[in-house]
Length: 206
Image 1 (cartoon, one colour):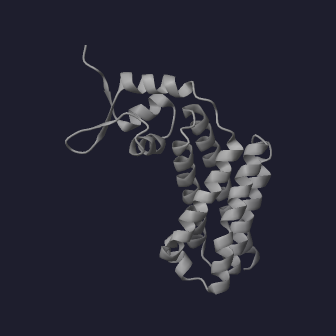
Image 2: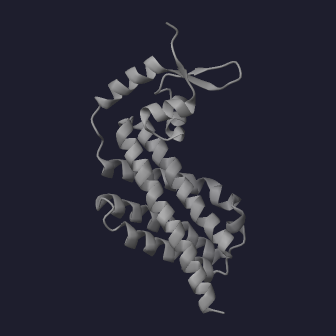
Image 3: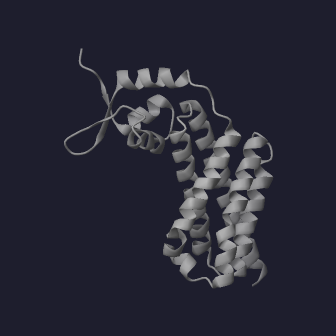
């Protein structure tokens, strides 16, 4: 019987993780993968199931340890000049830039509090962080598009670091998937809060 081949998205569905996680595991050599002549990733169902079975037997890594590594990784990413390349950041003066360099902390610490409370205080945490991003943007006369771009920059840096840290640590697939889902739920709520707060502040000043 011919071995069934899977695309990257099919492999992600089989493992119950985001396609970005599968891509990272593949790039790191942790997940068995093959490439077509056109350069597309393909996976053998049997190899994926065997890998998943072996991975499930691994011990779950303490979330606190992984979160600390994520914060370190984010700091490295931001210090590598990525901020300077952002169009919204280039419009800011020295004081505003200093504030935004520190703005990632509220996002990371908010996520840690959210995870620690198992999401019970998610609404208040998300609102607080969203309010902070919106009020800072208004303070420095940023329009709502640049305000969102600024938040997404830090959100993306956080997600990329999460995928890297969990992949490098070879955390169990279900642990990675759960953390990825929590992060997206939390940051989506922050984005909604940011937009609602920005609109409220803008209307108040008319």
